[in-house]
Figure 1: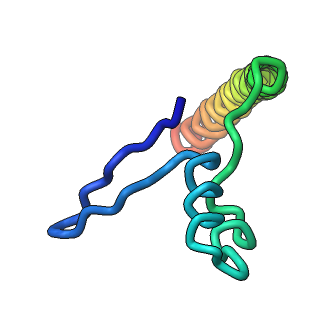
Figure 2: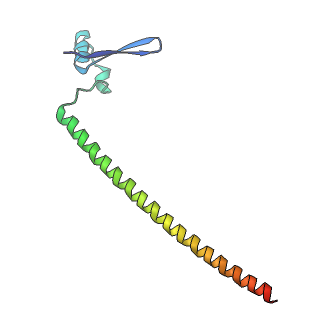
Amino acid sequence: MCRSSSLLFGALIFRRFSCDEHERRCRQSRASRCISRSIRLYKPIMTDAQVEEIKRHFGVVAEALKSAIRQVAEDHSGIGRELQEVRDEFRDEFREMRALYEAFIFTT
């Protein structure tokens, strides 16, 4: 069974064929060298095993991305806590300096 489809780009219609049909057409035209084969324009249809391998690979990649995102989120929350600690420290030091300044102003 040969699969083919038509693609419409503007006013031009291009006909795209499956790899098998394209090879048959090249043999019929007795082309000395098929450019589509040299640039690998038409690729054979993947087998179920290849599809499953790709799914498994992307599952591994997705899991790695999830763990990386989780690590970034944990680091972000840690940085937020550290920043809050620094803010609290500055606020306490500012209050202490203000109290010393007010004590100095009122005693003189």
